[in-house]
Length: 156
Image 1 (cartoon, rainbow, N blue to C red):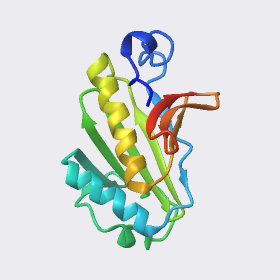
Image 2 (image 1 turned 45 degrees about the vertical axis):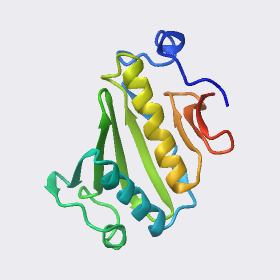
Image 3 (image 1 turned 180 degrees about the vertical axis):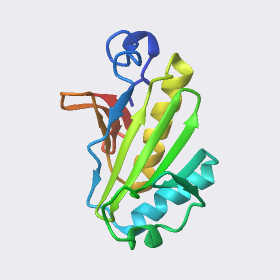
């Protein structure tokens, strides 16, 4: 198993929150409503700060199959905002059961603690779903993410 990512090795070129701010995910493909529910259960179990929005209205977090049964499209697309720890936020967009869309907010990422939170978050999601969780930098290919085969977060 490789060493964890070190802030000192990557802060200057890989994770420049001032320049990037977001690591968009391509999405976790080939998912089901059960995978969505596993993700929601993980968020609750970990006690991660969370807010569920439908349009501009905050509401209680429903079960995944309820959200996924709502008609698609429109301005009221459901969104789950999660803050797993200092400097890291994530947004999950409910578009359909077959794909979990994820963007990671690293605008406040400032140090090793934040990088550890980010890596722990990506790994927890990937392990719970049994899938790799890639993120991307604008205009590039895979960037940073949990690799299921290696069972760790890697820089691509």
